[in-house]
Length: 250
Ligand SMILES: C[S@@+](CC[C@H](N)C(=O)[O-])C[C@H]1O[C@@H](n2cnc3c(N)ncnc32)[C@H](O)[C@@H]1O
Image 1 (cartoon, rainbow, N blue to C red):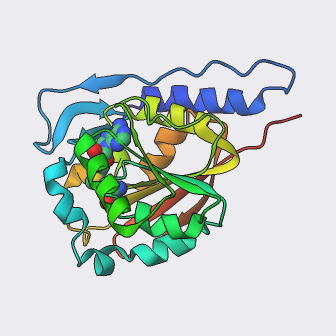
Image 2 (cartoon, rainbow, N blue to C red):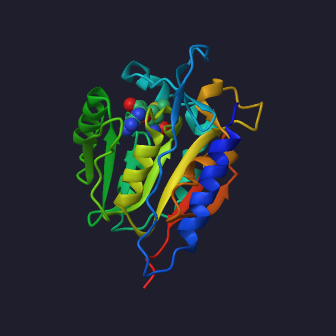
């Protein structure tokens, strides 16, 4: 994994400046870190790099059966993840990069009739699978949304929790996606990265589909309005890195 110290230095300066801003001063404009492309790259990546990390190829809808594999219960312990998220009735939860809806349909009963789960994905085939599943199960509080590579199409200031399971490393435009998701969160809302642990050689997942906690933190540095509040390390293969949107200063 390569990393540009020049870029890191710039980001650190920006975050510190943003945090130090006085409430009566306009927030400093966020500068988008640059993407790089390289001809020599991992065959599972797209040859586009962000802060030293190669972005992975998107998993096609043809792989949906892998997402629904029974072994996933043992490999990822999704019930433990969902419990750790402390989802409450009435919440608006977004499952971004929802795929076939594996987590969407675990979340739907928890938010209840007064809440909803917004399942966003860029592949219409994935959205169709979720629509069919909702019909089959009689689930009424799941709303499917077709996002784009730069925008998950969530309502501004309308979401309590955004979950991304095995997704973020595939975003072709991670900066733009996070910027939109931060706007979508209510103050106090949480942005949750669930990624295969790069630090753990016993996690047998393709390299570009894994991310270290350090890299997640680095890529969140431009977003001074988000605070790293927790990392949950109790899942078998993944870590759960949680950021909370700061309350606006009066
Ligand atoms: C490996 S799958 C994970 C699906 C699901 N989260 C799960 O754990 O079962 C990654 C999903 O992210 C979606 N995806 C990739 N880039 C996206 C973007 N910019 N916005 C929304 N979804 C995206 C892909 O279409 C794919 O369905």
